[in-house]
Length: 424
Ligand code: NAD
Image (tube, rainbow, N blue to C red; front, side, top):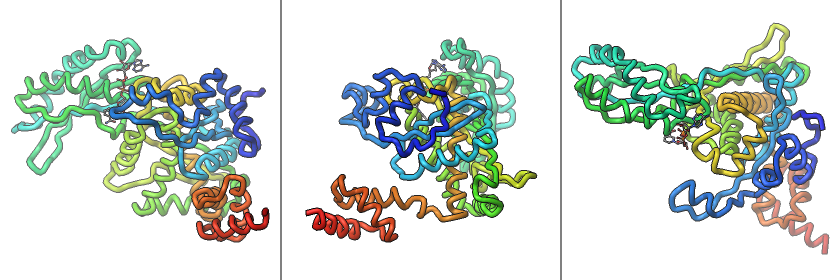
């Protein structure tokens, strides 16, 4: 089989046919394929190792986004999400981007920030300088905490000192910048921040309170860009419509919240599937979006000189391939293998590309048919299933509700009754 993520009609295949393709693409063992198709059935010993008071596990649908070409490499992207249309929209947007080579990405070094809060300082500027003069000692002390990370080429890199004005007066906030390589980094950074706190107290005469990671991972950014040719997406009007939608989000925080939510639909689904921390990614994304003081879109859409649509995204991406659940959860492990990512930065760049694709798909739908029409079939299927329609009648009930444009529980029940009577 040619190793491409451009798979025509993947959505029309049965689940077992899809799994066969995925298994071959990712070179997965039968055990790994089982972990992907396990319908959330974790071995009981696993949840008990992951959290406190475990009683079970909670399953989400796992879908595969096809068609992703990123920096010339094909990816099948696992997405764990309960919301209909997300996987289809990402796959479709990725398909349309392939005509111009797909997605191109880059990222900064994987540098996270540990904060140490210093209070009770009368002369904050002087203290700031004293701390910066001791940078070498602070970095040495931090790096002693994690020889493994240092050996892998990571470790504490720099110290930054900010004076923050609180309601009670100035605080001196020390930032420890740590290259965390392929870890998400929270534990690694927290350990270092705790270790340097006594030295900071000693040299400053102040009192340290908090010593913890900042989720505003502004030094750890992933970027992606793609061009959607106007002829593939519906012409000049669609290009202009998407740009108008972007400009609306750029000017209005009420729209921008939903714009960025659409981006996170894609990113979070990959984050969950790979066992990463959705809360860290969410807080990083939204605080980064608001860093100028006004809440802004994470993506930008422009028109190229040829009249095509170009989209770009820049977003903090604190993801790991080691630590947390990534190495414990069998489905997450199999999903990471399927993705074939070799570094956490590569995973972050895939997430950025998926976020951009998702956002493009949503804006295109909004600028053309509206979101509801695209959502309709899956939404109708959900309504049919939740109104008690038996499995063998769901397809037919869905078809009728969509045709009638009446997607309601009471109508699903009526149609079910009619079909039952007719089939008797
Ligand atoms: P971790 O401590 O389990 O793993 C990181 C360690 O693994 C490193 O310190 C290093 O010693 C070692 N390591 C081995 N191979 C490595 C490689 N290739 N690259 C980098 N390190 C390597 O995990 P972590 O990533 O430090 O912390 C992540 C966890 O912390 C997540 O579960 C997250 O949910 C949680 N957490 C988050 C927050 C927050 O976001 N504010 C706060 C506390 C905890």
